[in-house]
Structure formats: C-alpha cells, structure tokens
Image (cartoon, rainbow, N blue to C red):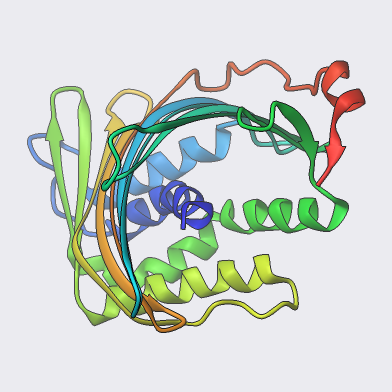
Length: 278
C-alpha cells in the first residue's frame, strides 16, 4: 500500500485547498477561504522545487483462514524534488517488526528519479538497481498525472462542505475529517487506478469492502508566502484483498522547506555504471 499512499497524500494538498471555496473570513484574519485558495494555488504554480522530511508510522494486520500476522513499520524519509524536468533524490530508513517477534529489521533505501531513469539501492541487497524502461514509464506517468492540480480539484469538489479553516500563529490551518461512503468510494477509485497502472495488463488484486475510520488531514500554510509547510494525516482503513482481511493504520507527519532552492539532481556516474536492471 505504500506505493500509492505517499503520492496520494502529496497530491491531496492541492485538492484540500481547492475545496475551501467559501467567502467566510478565515479565523482571526481578513482573508477569505476563497482568497486563501487562490493565493496558495498561485504560489504552487511558481514552485519549481522543494525538500521534504517526514515520519510515517504504520500498523498492518493481515488475516486469512489459516493465520493472522501483525506488523509495525516506522519510516524516516528525506526527499528533494524538482518539478521540471521531474526529478528527485530520496533516502528512507524503515524499521519493520513482526509483533510476535522481539527484534525489528532495519532497511535503508536510497534512490534517484531523473530523465536518465529510476535508480534505487536497498540495504539488504547492497546493489544499485535500475528500473526497466516499462517500469520507469509507469512511475513517471503516475507522478505526472498526480501533479495536475486541476484534475485533483475536480476529484475532490464533492467534499467542499467537509473542510474546516482556521489560523494558528503565522499559519493558516486546513482540517478535513473524512468519513462515510462518499469518501470511501473516492479513495477506492484512486487505489484501483494506481493498481491498474502498476499491473500494466497483468491481473491486479481485487479490493472489496474497503472502509475508513478516523481519517484526518491537517495542512499548515505560511501566512506570508502561502507555501504549504507542514502536513499531518491519520488514516485507519480495512479492506479485503482476494478474500483476505487487511487492516492498516497510518500516521504521517511531513514538513516541506527549501522552496525553489533545490540544486539540480543528477545520478552519479558510479551509480549508472554499476546498476543492474530490475
């Protein structure tokens, strides 16, 4: 599920802003939600690059007829992103622990995404790998699609009445507590679209009975420059995948900085020369 969750969280930022389209004053300020949206969207259009750091905590429970497994994951990530041409560099450390066992397993990842390809190194293999052309096109296509603000605004327009807008210090704060069949249908459609794209003709897993509880998004926007600086999310979900029950609780805390200051991202020569194709 991580493959779709992080990109989805990032693209939801613009959608949340677009849904705040009332003329009521925001908290103790003189700006309306509509004005906040317009100014923030305008700022995002000038955003050429940024850096993000974050912590993602997950608990996953898998149930089948024969067994039940529970796993805790905690990931610390850092990422630099440039919009055009789309490129990024990231590092991530993940601790994975089977609840039934005492010791946790650490996994470190490092990767580059540029027009030269997608390169990734994972600590248990200690070998740089390069995605095939087909895999790279899937990843690139997915990110390009998710970076279209207008498309996300259309998708989230039905949640207009579900948002709360307030202020906190030097930040505007947008909060969404999402629940109900309408939101479940929206998320399921997004997940299935991602799985369809990743499957590329192969049979994708069937997702049934998807439900969400305690879903909350909190977005912090700088009052001076209208940059989105901080986002926190909580999502509890349950679903059936090919007849097996899966429950997942995800707690994400992301901070954005270094706006328009990321240096060009290039893949080191030693990586391109030593990488093996996946």
